[in-house]
Image 1 (spheres, rainbow, N blue to C red):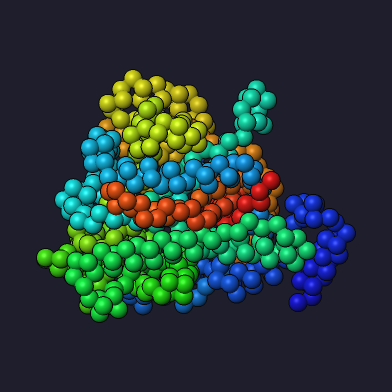
Image 2: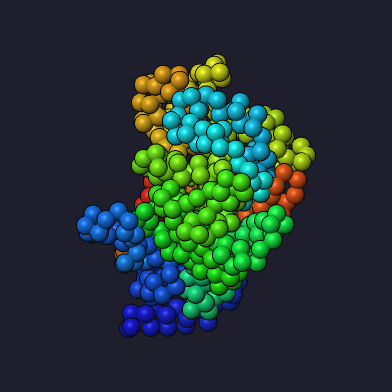
Amino acid sequence: MRFISTAFLASSRHSQQQQKGNALRMSASKEMIPEAVSWCVAHGAVYALPIKDAEMLGEEYEAGGAFAHAPFALNPFEWPKAEYDKVVALQPALSLAIDSVSRDAEWLEKTLGETVASDEFTRRVWKLYQDYPNPQSLTLGLLRSDYMLDEPNGDKRQKRETRSLQVEINTIASSFACLSETISSLHSYLAAKQGVDQQLSNEAGRGLAAGIAEAHLAYLDQQQSAESSSARRAVATTVMVVQPGERNQMDQRKLEHFLWDRHSVPMVRLTLQDIEDRGIVQGDTKILSVDDMEVSVVYFRAGYSPDDYSSEDQWSARAKIERSMAIKCPSAAYQLAGTKKVQQALAAPGALERFTNDAETANEIRTVFAGLFDLDEAAAADADKAVASALADPSKFVLKPQREGGGNNLYGDEIKEALERMTPKERSAYILMERIVSQPRFGTLVRNGVPITGDCVAELGIYSAILKNEREVLLNSVCGHLLRQKLLGVDEGGVAAGFAVLSSPNLV
Ligand code: ADP
Ligand code: MG
């Protein structure tokens, strides 16, 4: 442990000489990496390793026999406090707006019409929504709204201030709440070792778990008034729908543990195939059960990507869940409310007002919207104008299909190539977005125990939980945050997809 003690002694001596006011300038040094990696492993900031002999073990076998530390940044990333406070304050209104969108069948149909016709995956989710009406009026949203800092101040001709612009809002499988909590604690730990107490608390994972627990109780209350049974309470469980071979498993396990330890609520992990094979929806009550366990809440950490539907079985499982009384997180409608197309449509002038209580709230939310351009055929001249701008300077745009999970967007020359090749109908499966330009800050990223240093940019995610029926808001909370940091020049941003690492904000 020599490498650690000398590093820590040196830095703690250093810290004693400094006033706390200088705290922000202090940072963990590279010598602390082994300490940081050990801390991550000890506290569960880990990722499952791919299984070498997975084929031999069969598809059912879940990754998780071996784990390594999740990729992380050695130090928090500077983020303007005013911008952080602003997006945190906006989150409850955003959650309400998304919930309202999900309940507005007419608007969804009008907005998604062309997308459904041109994008097969959106069509399938739409069909789920249409063919299997959800009998459960309560919906649980565990959302994450992601932002980047728009900082064109590097360019002196631009007089704009730094501001947060929304990259997207996730309504399905918003991940990393638990690992993000752990990385915030890692940064607190490393800072404390240097005599600095500067961290921002982050209870993202606990907050999401509290949301699921609240939904579980609401379900039991509702069902109990329908048909009282204390035995039912004892056997009802929540379900996490997972991908086979999930590598980001510890983030999910921690949520399951929070639920159990803090709320005494059970959760079982099932794939869509498991639900297809073992799930039953009762004809009269529409109660969903799996292996004789009544299911209160179905929380999806799978089902957002076409890859999650290897056969019709997975769609059939989705249908089973959708038409049951279980509270869905999310329902098909909620999943549709999180599409890129809906994001673009909400940014159109006057659109948000339909989903907010007042014009002031709509205006507040709109301040975080980047330029978003409609590529529907119906948008005709406007779409052509946007396409012409993107062809003239593709570096100013991102072209996005209706996909989640990272690695799907097009940048630079890819945009040009795609726009030139696509028919107007194919084009309407995409949206075009203004590219957000952040000023880089130096950072050290650690992957597999190895540091990589360089200029970095970051994306801040704000988690919220909303439990609501048509009339009543049972819960609308802001849970915590996620800060993903990546090297400048890397276009995409996902941690699971290998582009970014987990970090935390250092508010300045
Ligand atoms: P996904 O659903 O795949 O996560 P996102 O819209 O979040 O799709 O895009 C993926 C990543 O691409 C983001 O994490 C971010 O790093 C980058 N990105 C997306 N939109 C923009 C944008 N407008 N400007 C700059 N980078 C963007
Ligand atoms: Mg994203």
